[in-house]
Image 1 (cartoon, each protein chain N blue to C red):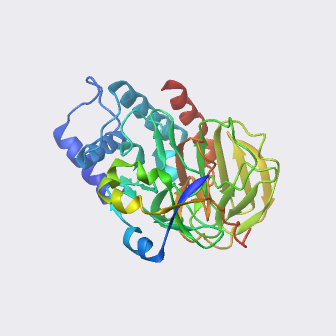
Image 2: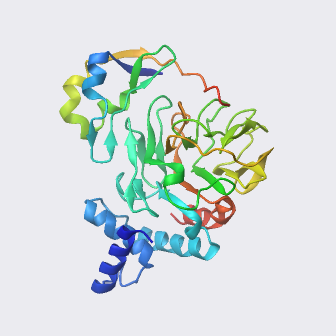
Length: 266
Length: 70
């Protein structure tokens, strides 16, 4: 547990103040609210706080929470700063070149320069993302209007963490497992994820494998972990992304149901 | 798609300007020009920089090519 999270949990315990109409939230979600309050951000509505608390509970039950190094929920009725809070690290992501925020949907890029930056190298976000056990991904709100392109959904600001998911041949690079793959333009809205498990690199759409490359990771990526960006390429303009994560290899499976439930609830 | 091009002098003055969780960060397009998106003009957090931002040159976006390691 980080020192920051420990501090917020301690404060919460001492104050013992329930939120959201008398509901006592999970300490880790309460820590998110407390962090955002301290920073002066506008919190989500009480009903959405309840939904987000349930999301944390569901992520813990599935095992995803403990295996993520970074997790940000952009789909919120809190303000655009609350949407940038990394729930795992209790730190704010940076909105570079003013990506556009849409309440209850998330952020989208202008397709040329704007994106969201964790400000941290992907393997330095925490202890879960490693060679042979790594993943990152994002929830795409809608695929309407998406076209096959070199748009980068998420990954790192430099090499070996690249994900061009919505092309007639996907382009993949995770931990130096690199290559082209299956047709990604047939994917549905929802999670588009990439994992490296020591044997394969697998891209998934809502948990279902789209492309599988043979080979285990050999080199960690360089550059900060980013969303709406993969290396020099930004995600397609006007296509909203509702969350982003990085963590261990099995997170793409573990996170699927909890976040889909959350998106259906808001 | 239109973007905003900065001279080296403008880039030096505006690159890295941060307001809270928002930052201006120029990137190179396919022609080697320093560019940022037009959204920075409408972001109220950068209102104090508006007089400098409106002096950037509007150009057509030239997408960079994907890097060699793919």
